[in-house]
Image 1 (cartoon, rainbow, N blue to C red):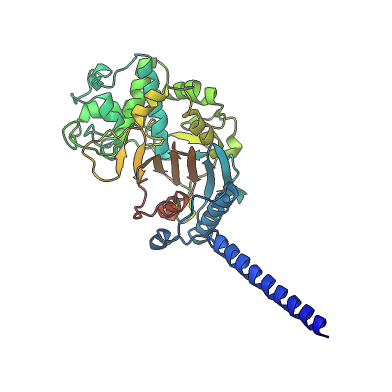
Image 2 (cartoon, rainbow, N blue to C red):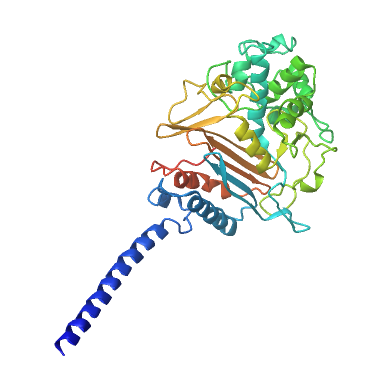
Length: 398
């Protein structure tokens, strides 16, 4: 009888011990799981609820999917997303429609207008010519266009947005009357020569983001190479990198026409063609997330330009800019603590785009959207989570 009681007591104690262990493990599991709940996109909560560096690739992928699923449901995000980390694609997905009228779904290879992300391609093309000794950063623009009405503006100032030139998107609207015919880069230069719109400020006085700068850079590339800008970029960048779903301008010869998306406004209305669509260098490149991933990987090699040359483009070029933001040559720069991130956003006629690269961990974030909306206001929240940054939230500049 006594042995039976002891045996029963041991059984009870063992059962209680198992319950205790299970409870502890269960709590630990819940604690880990809390890191993976769908992120709240409210900015003030993004600082407190950050992602720990110990997350695995699959856990990071889950976090990315949670975020973009939420903004697609709440903020009507419509587009494609690719995220890589340590040179590996950890997430790739399409949300929504390539065409709202036909309900054609977006695909991973759907093609979007990159808008201002195009500027980094223009900048790298300039660096390619610099490496060959065909141009110098301190060349005056009048070297290439003798009738250009402004002196003292150099290629370096165009690259870093320090020229003081007026934005063509504004003065063309005033001086160009036949808006049924698309403008070209050459037309923009002719309008500047003819009407001499006033500078915003003297050359190199300060930073001012201006699309005219990269329009002129594209024209200089064309002048130096004696090759149309779109042909040069295609032959020297797209083809060598296998970016076969990328092109420049409104190409009628694009092989993958079925992958082209339509740009929409916030009311799901398709955007009509614009007379400024034909101006290249500041915008005008069409591509997809997979091709941009090839571009990102190539920038870690010497295939296009030397790493030492690329470093010039990724160095802050505006010493008078204060805070943790700056601009290089074709890239915006922001610092999360001591880590520099290189990025650019874009907007043009129904398209919002964003591309960021972090050389420290070889990560990248590529977001292409063919519908204008406010989803992009949430990108900084996502960046803080992805990089476990606990600093203040600053919304991105497109």
